[in-house]
Length: 328
Image (cartoon, rainbow, N blue to C red):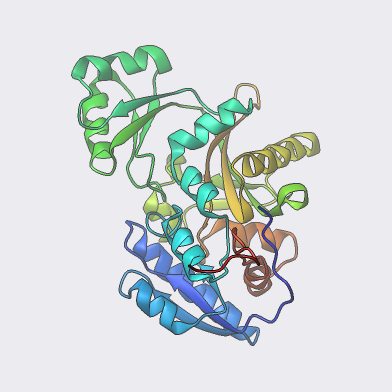
């Protein structure tokens, strides 16, 4: 359903942050930044830590709308979106279904495959029952090196690169700590890119492409948020035709999942032939000092503060109550 907001009188705004996921620390940084940005624009914004306060307390705050700065489970996976739908509080980002699918890397890839969008080959392994023989066969199918991922985590949590057969068991055990299944994925050697997308449907638009150059290609949790060693090139040094192709793919990937509001689409650009591959989509991206969406917006002449306001303007509900509905 279309998500529209009438007018730009925001009223009392809640910034949902913190939460209970493995990405709580990053969410606190994102939420704090968003709060300061909204306040700087004269918006009556207030922090609300969903990891420490209940939904009853959220309802009691009587927010007119909320900016979701939660990352990972219980905030980015459709659960909070569903609660907000029940409470009738408009929120930023994609709705319940799109958020739930996008949070699951396996389901995301299946949707993209069904739409003939390029994504690396993969195998899904049961975290509890996969046998040593099943693990041994994975490199035979996907080749080496390969990636093992916890499908419901973000910020590079629960990810292991497997260089040889002997690494499979250890890498699998690491990922299995975080999820019920483990995603084994073909490794794409090349350049790491990301593309933020704003809007919805035909009005969805891609921001400039960002290239991520981490030390030794290791864009892990530490290099994402807590060091200045990683370099971000924006706009990415690509020719115009390839840039437009990647941006178009980002919008297609965004729309294929039914996303609205904003999200960030991650790619690998294969070195051997410059073919782009979709990795995943983040429906509540980071908004820290190292985050990628603000970097892309800045390259488009949009400040962090104005970006936060633009995202907030898209806050709405997926489901509108029927005018004819009355309780029994």
